[in-house]
Image (cartoon, rainbow, N blue to C red; front, side):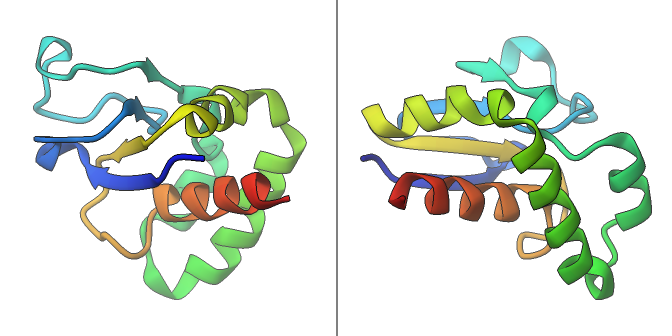
Length: 118
């Protein structure tokens, strides 16, 4: 099993393994030709309603985490490519949010690690 790293899309130099953008929206100021991706997995990102509700407010992160994990559990096919890639080697999840500790990639990484350890 490989490692799963998370990295801000704006700091995506020297990433390891398979690289996936895990935001529903394309990041501002980034040309598609500037990123070497193995996939843009929009469907693994939080729903628009959940994303808007969270609004990157740290005080909502615990509740966001619970709701987002429920969404992930309800759509196992969305995470399948990430699980398969992580079984083969390292994976890097790219996200655009400014806060490195309170974003969907943190929750997604932990969800994937939980699934892989089962």
